Length: 343
Ligand code: COI
Image (cartoon, rainbow, N blue to C red):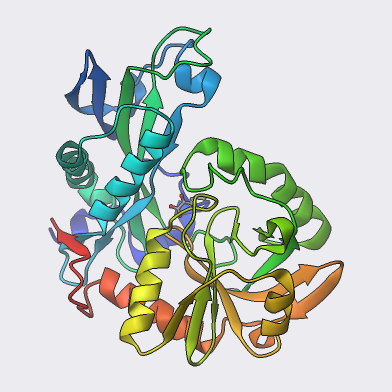
C-alpha cells in the first residue's frame, strides 16, 4: 500500500479528536446462539441491530477491550499483544457469566477488522484503536438474576491520535479516598465501572481542572478512571499488585516488563496516600493504558493542596519508558517477548 491510498496523514491527526469519535464503516460480528459462536463476517455498522429488551441494556451484561494496530514505517501493520487482550476479555466475560469469546475466532475478527480498515490506519503518531465488545442479548427484561445465554461480539475500529486532549502536557490528578468501583468488579472491563467514575471525574474537572481522579479507597492507591497508575524514579517502578479490585492493564504489564529489561527494580506492592505524597518530593508518576500509553503526571491535588511532580512536566524516566514501549509497538525495537502480531 502506498501513502496515496491512506485516508489520513500525520497532519490530519487533530481531526481525529476527540479520541474514538471517528469510526470505520464496518464491524466484524459474531453471535453466540444455541450453545455456539457463529460468525457473521463483516457488516456495515448501520446494519447492527439490538433488541430494546436485550439483557446488556437492562442488567449491564457487557464487557469490552481496547487495543491498537500500528502502521510501521515500512507500511506494514502490527497488532500489539492481541492475545493478552483476548484473555482479559475472556476473564471479564467469565465474571459477568457471559458466553466466553473463542480465542481464535476473536483473533480472526480483529484481523478482519484491521484489514477492512487498512486505509484508515494513520501513520505515526496515530494508531487504529480496536474496540471488541461483548453484549448479553437474551430478551427477557425480568432476567435480573439470570445470566444471558446468548450474546453478540463485535469489533469496531477508530483511527486515533492522543487520548488526552492536552497531548503531551503532564496530567493533573485529584486524589480521592474512595473506590472507582467494587472490590470484586475492578478487574472487569465493563461500562458500569466507567459510569461510576464519570460524575465524580467531571465534578473534579470543573472544580480543580483535573484530567483524572486517582481512586484510593481507605488510602490504598489503586487506579484512575481510565488507566492504571505507576510510580517511577531512576531505579524503581512501583505499582499495586494485581487483585480483583482494579483493571489488569496490558500496558501496565508491558511497562513493568520493559522496565525490568532496562534494569529498573519492579516493586508490585500496596502503598498508601501518605507514601504517594512523600514520593512526589523526588519521584515521577504516570498513567498507563492502551489509550493513555504512558502519560506523565505533573500535579496531584489532595485535601485542597497541590503537589508538583517533576517540575510539573513528564519526568525523564517516564519519557524513557514511554519511548521504549512505543519503539516496540512501532517495530523500531524488538524485545523478544512475542508481543507483536504482524498482519
Ligand atoms: C483503553 O485504554 O483502551 C481504555 O479502554 C480506556 C478508555 C477510557 C478509552
